[in-house]
Length: 353
Image (cartoon, rainbow, N blue to C red; front, side, top):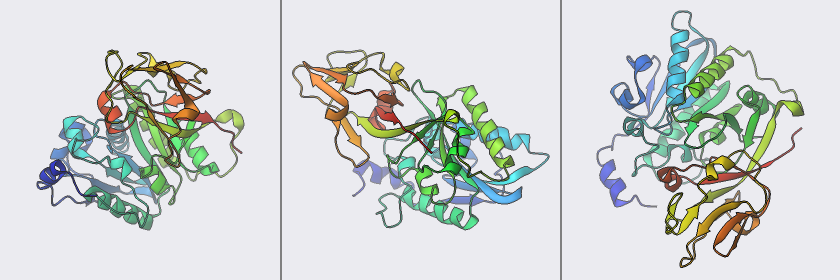
């Protein structure tokens, strides 16, 4: 796939894009805002800091430039151990510094950093993906203790952990953050999937953008992790975890307009849609209304990439309704995020042993 014209123009200024590595904390990092981080590090960076236990905890932050929770949690952690030293070594990957400068998920001409952690043999289309391959190779040599990818979101969602492997050590790591745990294998190319081959790995969703409670929760989790001697492989009690499986991704096809407030658009979503997040929605609940003159539909993709709209939704008399009992997550009203990523995910509760 060739770069778009816009991407080529922008990347003319970034031909030297590379991974920057540090074995010390760059001056100014501790007190820098996300928007000013470009003054401290020049781009995607991997920072290795020594601790008393040598096997490092890997922490990924700012893969999305507006999700600043990871930066501020790490700053809080490093300040807390500035005098006494870290209980465990930490390797910190700092992602999309340019998007952080603008306070957006990604710049329009950029790929999504958290879709570029590709499996060996997959074609690499973007320079950023080569950076991710270098990070994986470096950390593979270091044999990480565990991996944490820190995120926020724009919808009404609880704090929860995501895993990509149903394994007791992954469960234990996840419930250290939240009783609510989501297992997924799509979207592909995310950091936690790549690192699941190296160590127990989680993605943490730390609430709404800019939420101080999310920063505090992330700090407390990382602090707990660096003090662990090991991650147990014992079985989890059923009452200790609510486990859900992401079975489909809901997208708005780019050819259709949509709104949460204007019924003249191709698709008019229920204005209260965001309240469906992490609730088991009843059959026949309203989801959207389509314009009578447009053949507008949603794209609902399962783990195999197949369109399964009819499995989860009904569409009659220009109304889209829930066909089967399902639990949505990550529903957002942010139109830019919906276009850049998706409208939401659909989950089902699963048993574990």
